[in-house]
Length: 415
Image (cartoon, rainbow, N blue to C red; front, side):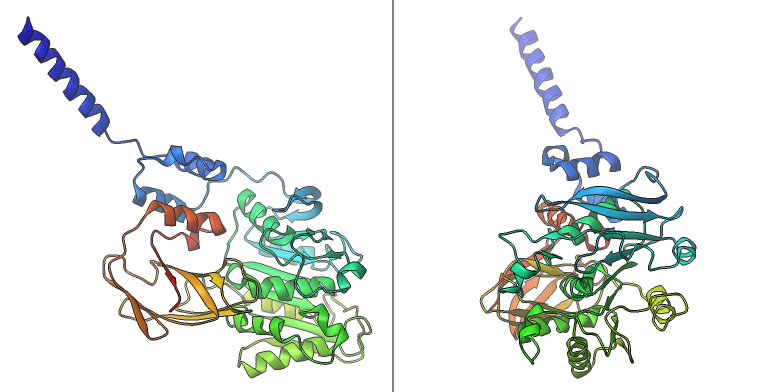
């Protein structure tokens, strides 16, 4: 009897051990992205990291397009602000064009600016949101006293209407994330400059019209130096901008200064100054701008894996560009120049940066080999870097872009 009881206990122990050691079934793609959207980390417990990485690199599985055609739909941004968005979806979406209206306009102001034949032929989704008053606790840093005179404006924060809406459209529709274009007129031109230069890694090109980069330039005769530092990021952003030389609302000098700043940095761009034109620009198919602009947009495509990165920030909040993230700064601005060499090494030059993260892009870095990181001439790491779930989820959460999903990262305080 004792022997039989002991055997029964042994069988039970082996059975329980086998159950605990049994492999967990690989999560399906649909369930994975559902768990990511719901922040349901328990659903990912025990999953194979490489399996999750492969699924995330393929991107989310979408239902057939909700509709094709044009509609105005309600939208809420990351600050909880509600607005309206004009959305035009072709039958076969392949790219996304974001249009930002001017002061006093709305989501329909620029809706007809681009030929429907071109949009349908090239499969371009049009996204045109309506601006709202800036979040009280998160104003743009160039407003000053002008905020009371111009309460409606485009937020330059990642949680604002524009960047939130781009992410929302990417969740609904399948299109090439390397073909996202941003344009705007007047106030929308300011928005295109500022959002384009802050989020250059998410765009294929930007095309501001009759705009500028800082409203503080209305009360001075010099460039707003701190905002002009953002031009460093234009090395990653093809730019086409136009301005009438008789503009009585937004001085042409604003974009002349930007043109000069880009020339000084030797960054290729296209600037069209329209002789005799005022604030409103002729965007007709036969006008002086649209043929050149259409050609420019159709040629532009993002490179998601650059070996060299320049990333400048002027706000002290986490800001990522491709595989580099500035987590905090100790000065009024921060800058990182980064380069991946052919020997699995990464060289960084930092100024004004307190802490940073380097995501190891496997299009450039071999995780099977030792990785070397040198910062401001000082060796901070040399050796293999192990993949981890935290980095994988973090890299997805920031962008929801398969090109920027990474399994490993290095996090340091700048020397």
